[in-house]
Image 1 (tube, rainbow, N blue to C red):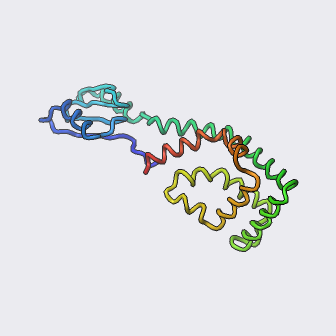
Image 2: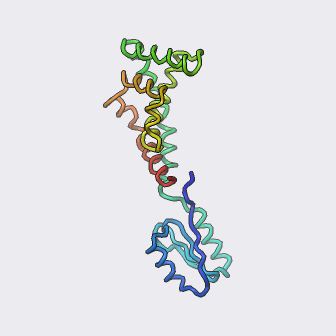
Length: 204
């Protein structure tokens, strides 16, 4: 995920290791997962707390310290993994709801049918002449599910709206999927989108 896994700070034997640790933290060094060592002893700091320290000549203790260092998982990454699992669990219901709404709109909304036909012709002209109405429905669903990611995660968010295909998809979406309906349908995916935003902020 391009997120820093941890940090390792090597100091000279002549340095006062504890004094150096405090000095580095005052300078803004990360405190989520970092090891300080001076070739004689090693100190592991995680989540702003000292977890353990040991002599580098003590292989069992040093191995334990290294295991703790390499097994550490940032809170944001843990939340992202949980959100992915929740996304997997909630996605089928969201997809079913979206497909149901699209089918009802096709059956009852002249505005939707006109917008869908307009987009189909546009897609056939700009993407591929073999694009079908079924393809349009799936493109619309993918657009709805990824809209939040493009709008809030990527720096080029405006590109998603300015792209001619995306712009036409927004117009089609606005004929049936806005306001409270949109909020209720995507409610189950909110934590997933929030986790993506949080993780992306770390990677930037």
